[in-house]
Length: 99
Image (cartoon, rainbow, N blue to C red; front, side):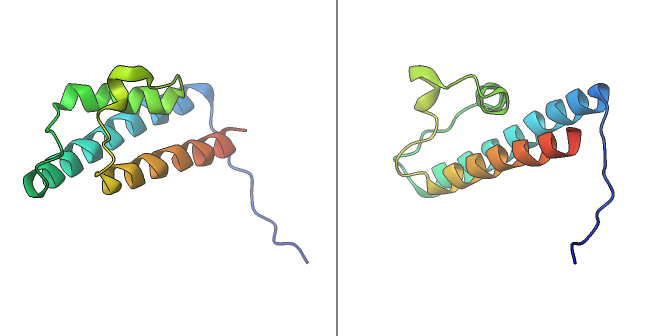
């Protein structure tokens, strides 16, 4: 027997609002993790909040990073990669609630 779940539908306005909120939520996460990691690892450079908003927006819209943005997440920064993966998976959740 399959479990019946009620369908939750989001309108276009709430979809856009939730996308913008997720961009800023993950930008704050990236900023905090970056400052935490740069404190303990000298290979990681501190980046400003606006750079993380731009990185989060590019991730959320799946445009592609290019060369300049790719330097924000270094090889040595595993925690930032995990936060990035969580953001990408949150896109699937947001899209599945919208359809």
